[in-house]
Length: 74
Ligand SMILES: [Zn+2]
Image (cartoon, rainbow, N blue to C red; front, side, top):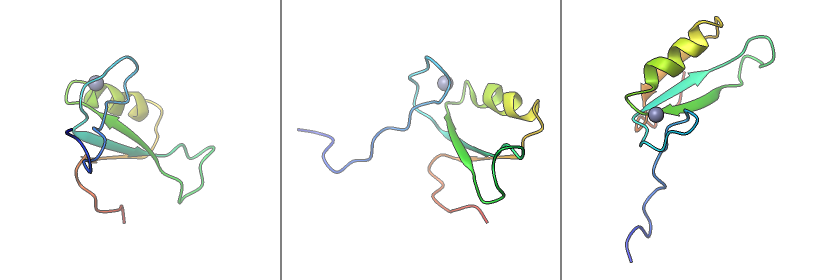
């Protein structure tokens, strides 16, 4: 039996994508989210640009960090 004690694989947040995420996009919609509310999307290398552009086009504040970076945002 393998996998016991191992974390769940991080899967890309892009609809229909089953790739392992290597990036984490932390974002917020200023119109509906308070300052301390942060949403997190996970992205594989192929879709990190798509997801970042999707949010950037809406002028949402966002931050892209490595998925295995466990440090919390400042
Ligand atoms: Zn993907």
